[in-house]
Structure formats: structure tokens, C-alpha cells
Length: 371
Image (cartoon, helix red, strand yellow):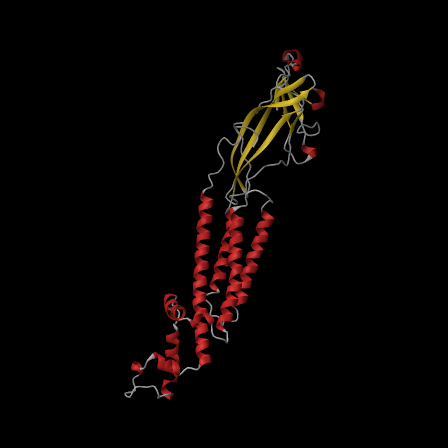
């Protein structure tokens, strides 16, 4: 802080050419200035006699330098976390000094070098001077103007750490959860794999909850992304249980009593999802038992002329029920896995589009006043 006090000037030639002296703060008048948005009451007043001294020159110029470490309140918007940009301000307010008594201005030193941080990149540091009107300033002064300088720090978060530790692992875990639909229904580790993926995503939800500050405003895009991936991964568990129940069901599937549904689930959809159809499975069973069963074989020993209905009679009713159930279960696995994959792809595209909408902070974020 620098100001001029004509009462403290002297003629250097009368004092042996002494042009600069160092004195204590409590020996002269100094302005009482505090930072309005500090969080620590001990740091409210930025000027303390124990922390600095005065440099006084013969023309009455006073220079006060004091080291200070303060924690300030910085309103942040975490919607684009971890690709967010924040503006943090230091608001200096002169105590009981209106503009008729003291005008307080600020400017940055040309040689200022921003601090280095592993979490943040300092984009810019600006200085602004504002004048605020304070009502009921004094008994005979109902309205007073007060000059308030503001130092503004523009910070950009480094997202590399959060991409490596949150976004990429959670995405891979969600994809692994969808892979369970590729496993056959009789796979014993299918449900265990789904539950393991859900537990892994739960850990990432806890990490995000610890990192992000609590807010009732817009939730971060990343938080919504992890929540939806968690929901999709959780949904794989009940769907897998339903398909396993279908595949191992002892009773016939009621939906297959209609001709159109049998055609759809046992013929058309299996071909569409690269699953062996019901007729293909029946023919496979016939090929296995054909050498020992000649009742339905053609006279020349060629089975090409045998109808499917004749082949189906060779299979017991319980075996046909199991084949139908397994075919439907595999078809449902492929369909549900495809639907989940499409939903996840839409979620990823939407998240990317939301992040690309981040235009950063406007250049004049601190010029109009306190953020």
C-alpha cells in the first residue's frame, strides 16, 4: 500500500542526505483496510503492526508492505467440473472512510508472476476499482460513497487427474456391466460380475461426493453422468436375473402360445441378433440322434426331405420347452444389451455436448462489481 502524507516530508539535505527511513506502523497514521470476504476472523484486518513496517521517503511517500495468508470465500460454479473456470476475488474495504476522506485505488505490478499450482492454472489476475453507495453511513451522512478496490483471480482447473481417476474408470466399469449380457444365461459368474461393477461405480460416487462441494444449485455434469451410469449398471442385475429365470424355467412361456409371438421370438429375432433359432436347435438335436433313429429318414438315407414337424416330434415336450426358453433368453440378452448400449452411447454424447458448451468466464466478469 502506498500513499502520500505531506506532514511526514523533510529536507534530506538537513539530515545528512538521509532520504529513506524505516519506521514502525504504530508511529504514524495508516488506513484501516480489511478484506470483506475472509473466512478467518484473525485475517479480517490485513494491516497488523506485528507483520510489517513502513518505508518512508523524504517527499512524504509512505510504502507499507505486509505478508499475509488468508482464506477467502469464493463463489464457484461447479456445473462444468472438472473443466470449470472460477473467478475468485479479494475485496478491500476501507473502514469508516468514504470518498470525501479517502479514495482507495488498486493496480497490479507489471512484474507480477502468478503462483504455480498442480490443481489450477492461473489464467489472469486483474485489478478493478469500484465505488459503492453505503446507506446510513453516519448520523449526519445518510448516504456515502466508498471506494472499494477488487483484485480478481481467474483460475482454470486442470482436469487430467479427474479424467484418469473418475471418468475413464467409471466408463469402463459401465461397459463391463453391459458385457454380462453377452455371457450365456447358464454362466455361474454372471450375477457376480454385474454386482461387482455396481460396487465399483458406488466407490466412484463416493469419490465424487468427497471432491465436489455441496450445492443446491445446478449439479455438475459429471455427477449426473456418474449417476446415470450407476443406474444403468444397477439395472443390469434385475434384467440378468429375469433372463436366467426364463432360461431355466420349467414351464412353457405364456407369450409363446400365440403364433405371431413364436415367429417373432423363435425365428425373426434370433436371426436378427445372431442367435441360433428354435428350428436350428431342433435340427442340431436331430443330427445328434439321427444315426440311431431311422424312423423318419428318407428311403435313400438322405434327411434333406424330412419336414421340420417330423423332426420336432423326435424331441420330448420338456426338451422343447427348454429350447424355447433358452432361445428367448438369449434373444432378450442381445436386445437388452443393445438397448443399454444405445442408452449409454446417448448419455456419453449428451455429456460431451454439455461439456462443449463451456465457454469459460466472460472477460469482464470482475469489471462490473463484486461477483
